[in-house]
Length: 256
Image (cartoon, rainbow, N blue to C red; front, side, top):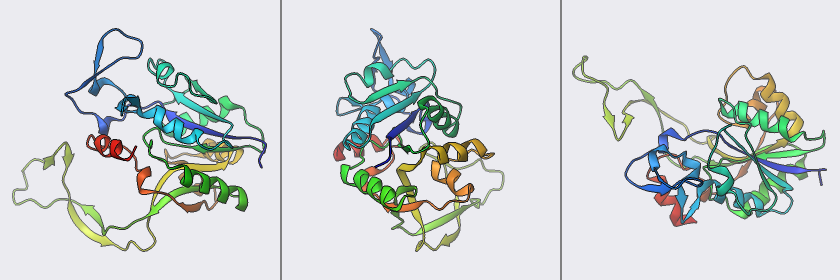
C-alpha cells in the first residue's frame, strides 16, 4: 500500500451547460429560495441531496481512500452544508479559474508526500459504482502506474463541420441552446474511449505535470500524457456518466 491515498474533487465551477430555469431550491445558509439557474450544478439536488454529496459518498465507499478533499471557490456559500456530517471529508476554498488550476492548488494545499497517490473525481459524476472505483485503485497500485476509468465508444462517431445552409446569410441554427453542425466525416471508433473519473496518479507526478502545462487540459490524464507518460485505461461504467445537460439530472436520479 502507498503511504497515503487521497481523493480531490474540484468543485469551483458553475456548470453553465446544466443550467435551466423553472424550479427552485433552498439555499444552504439563507432563508430564501434560490432559483436553480443561479445555483452551481454541483449543489443541485438529486433525490434530496446535493450532487456533490453523492459524488463524495461514492469515493468514501473505498476505505483505502484516507481523505476526500473538495476544492471550492473562495466565497462558496453552499459547501459546508452540502458536506455536513460526512466522514474523512474536508473542503478547502482554493478553487482557481480553471480545472487544472483548481486541482494543482488542491494538491499544493494537501502537502502530500513523495509516495502518496491521488484520485481526482468530477463532482458531476455522482453515479460512480464502488466496484469500478475498487478496480481502478487495484489496477493502478498493482501496476504501479497511473490510470483512469473510461468506456469504449459504442456509437458511430461523426466529426462536425460547418453546417451548409441554402442561405449563406442565414443565422446559425440553434436548437435547445446548442448550435447545430453538419457532418464532415465519420471517425473510426475501434480505438476510441470516453474518459471518465476518477483518474489516479502519483501525487507528485500529477503536480509536476499540471505545473508544466501551457495548455488548459480538460482532464488530468491529458496533462500526464503531455509529460510523456501513458495512463492505463480501466473499464468504467455507464452509470458513471457526467451530468452535463439539464435532462441528465432526471436520468441520474434513476440510477441513484
